[in-house]
Image 1 (tube, rainbow over the protein chains, first blue to last red):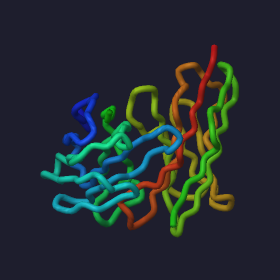
Image 2: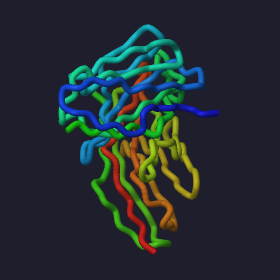
Image 3: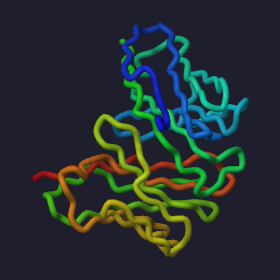
Image 4: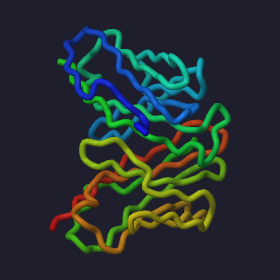
Length: 118
Length: 112
């Protein structure tokens, strides 16, 4: 059981380039999330999707777009990368849907994508 | 709104020392509480949870008790090991929401 799989694991971009981070889960979870992690800032939610076909902004959505392709897959796109987007990106999923659910909100994380924008 | 406050790190201990990492929260409802752990180079993984007041979550020798009167969920371990070196995140889940609120994380460094 793979859980949450993120690709790629590492990426180096030049300023202005675009790229898509891929995420897939095999746990039949309803909700999926994208976070970024920066030193001293903890985890910050970029976007999330509480069900197939819906997406919502998190704390730091500017400069990103997302697509919930189907129930399994949730991608994060950087249209024009900036050095401020250098970070480690994590995808997560949970059983919780639009109604939430105290223990259904347990999130399962991928191993992360380490992105450098030069 | 909801918030989670953790003690700042790093927390530096010698092997077999007692560990406490403080966590307090603010929530509008009656949340569930979690501790996640992140080992170097990895994603976060659930360490333990508690779903109601006075519940004690435990796993791998770690414990935390849900204290509603002090809005706290402090993480403790009686004897830490070098392999416990990691970043620990406190988090809460509030009813009706499909997101978690995380603290900023506390790094633990254990030396032999």
